[in-house]
Image: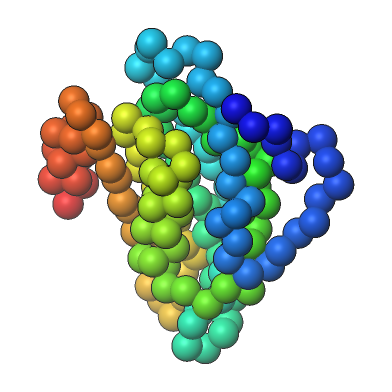
Length: 145
């Protein structure tokens, strides 16, 4: 693994989408299937039309393979959405795509619990499964309808 760029160093925050913040560390328990759950209840982004802030709790849950996401890099990455104009559905898909690219997990799900705006709460959910977990991902989507 390469040397980490963020952990233990001075933080240089960015407030527009910055996937380069994401870093991975070695999973020393790669022989075992287990879940890692990460929750950020201070997520913000901007509506791409009105530029009003949207607030959410982002829940990330995954079964790692060889890599884990380094938590400070994830915090910086999520913070980078603060001034980024994007729809709620795009947020969870972007986060999922970036984590799949970085980690190549066995299974991953990302859920955005967005605060009510205009009387409507939007809760987008995306998941992904690879290998034996592909069927699990499809089953979970069907059960969540």
